[in-house]
Length: 477
Image (tube, rainbow, N blue to C red; front, side, top):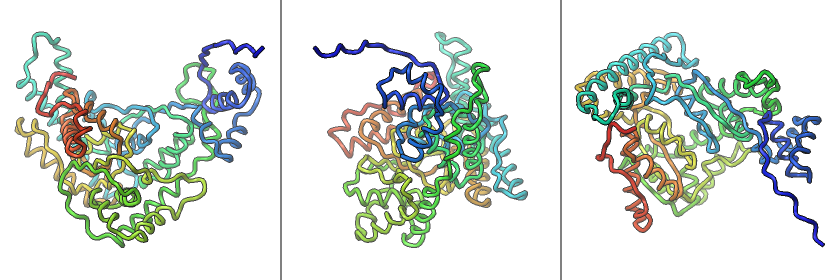
């Protein structure tokens, strides 16, 4: 007679310290014990020794996906927030510029600046925030006059919707230095990658944040549900998070190679360019060079495809020169997807950045691609005030040293971004981001992405749905 099947049970497990959770579930998968027996084992054994052996030394990386940590990062710049969130396997949210007034929050001053540069930065930042407050108040008055309250809408709901629409307009004058808060939930593995990447950042603030997250892993939680939660969160992780030197060195090597070997960047033909590469080696070479140049992606790809195999190999070798046996391939080596090369304002990018199923790459925040002007700015008679504030900020930005000067880049300024995705993700972005509840800036981008897919893939493009940007419902949120 065969042995009877085990009794089926569904057991919830109360939250544990992240490293203990990883230890318990990893042991659970490697033994015949029940989860209760595995938990009893973990109570009497040291999880740090297990993780040091199997995760950090033997490379059993999936173990670190079994423990999750919640962190809140308060008072960091919007630029730092974008860098923190730049992980594919990341869950979290930042403060919304649509529902909160950023005009009274001040701004983060990059620590790299000297005393004179700091004065220039502060003056430009104060001018942008003054313009932000002016535009918000004027836009609120203009929109209230243009969009009277429907009888079916309660006054408080109407006020919230008008205020949100006014903040949508005013946010073009926010800039990367304004402070925000970010809450995130990640696995130990993602957190380790994040900390190492942040510690290798070109921005001093971001490097400090990486070090502070690592230090917090070695300490008991700062915010506790009860007084019994006094164990350090992830002390083993904190010991092994050195800066990602391969990422830092590879970026520097590729930038130098591009400066020495590429001609001046050609002028792009469009702000929304959809391209589906057929030569994977040329695609990877172009993707490696994209973040360290000002070239449009299509032009880089065509250049790489026409280059000799030896020259493409030189690009790949340059990227890999600093790689150790413990380093994964850079994300730039992923290919075979639809490539959207997009020029958009920074505010729209902050919203598009949330689509983490995409492979995302950006070029330097140079401030050289101009800025957008919302129609409401013109309609409300604010064009002069808006342009003066934007122009002065960009002039000051070009007078300050990089990369600290990027903190002064307004959300209305345009920059170049590459998003690689499969068809399902393209369908999702076009459908969701073009909806009437969205910000008018990214609605336009999403609609043009849909049109580009219809031209490139007529057979598949018919499956995409979207809302044209000229269809509006300003009071819907």
